[in-house]
Length: 80
Image (cartoon, rainbow, N blue to C red; front, side):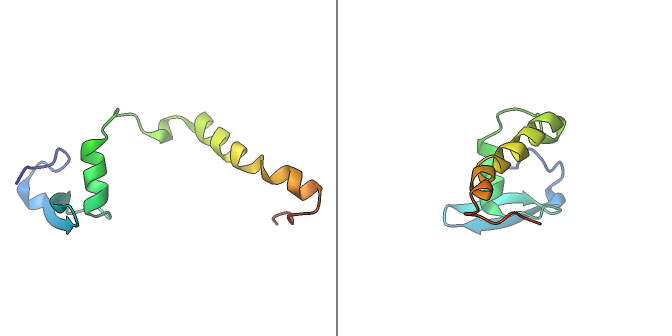
């Protein structure tokens, strides 16, 4: 079985299985086989989203936009 890149020692790995088969997951991880597969298969960059607080703020702001017209028309109540 192939070792994953994020657990340096074999004792730090647990084995999880899903419908696609068996995969190694770090023992300290709170996720399972499907997330471990996604981490292995979709390593686009080493940049984490937390390094861009402005981007996170824009995401939150954009989630508020669709709600504003409906609250002004009294279709959807305002959140408290």
